[in-house]
Image (cartoon, rainbow, N blue to C red):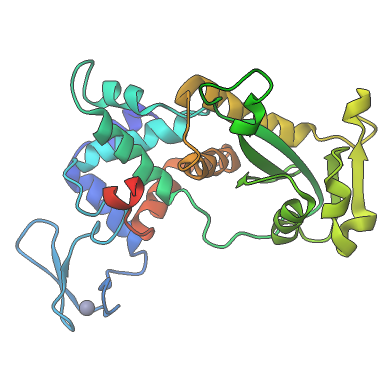
Length: 297
Ligand SMILES: [Zn+2]
């Protein structure tokens, strides 16, 4: 999907709405409240009414688009810009591209991107299997007033788990203790081969089920690849994440880091799919709304 495609196919509110209706109700319109399928179309534009409970609704009621005053055509462009930006896009750049150099508000653009991000979640995720690489990294800025060398502790920890030839998952972690790593591993990996570096917390994180399936590469002695024992594929996902954080978002607060991690992994795991744009919209009409109050609480 390109910008000219979106302009041509979804250049009017009506066309955007038609797509959202099809994505939200692939088997015919049903009432969001009571699930009844006896629905009548009202005279008012794009509104429906449920015969059973009399609830009036549109394709965007109770979704990520709920209560938005932005035209759907702008929403659609914002979705395309976000899913096609491999390293992410700042809210300021979105504001300039949709409204112009000195127009629009940063807050509107920031909230718009966060609502799209909120839909970028996997409903039911399969366990990763085959050969799975795990690594940890530190992202974000250093707080003011710290001496050199204290910086690392003020950064945020991200755990990356990637199945070779498959999906990546990023997690914001509070620490890199064995117990913490144990939980991430056991929640996401089925019993197969796990490759890590020689960081001392990993052996204790394997537990009985992975003890004999764990291979580690001796990074501290400068060794990075021995046959198929390496963590290069999870590190390549990390490098994209870091370029996004350094180049695009500059400084992310710890509070919003999980939302950016969701965005990065959602886009990364779908990077070869032709339906990335439409799939994101599908998530947006099936996810719960994100109010500004909840986002900034
Ligand atoms: Zn109803």
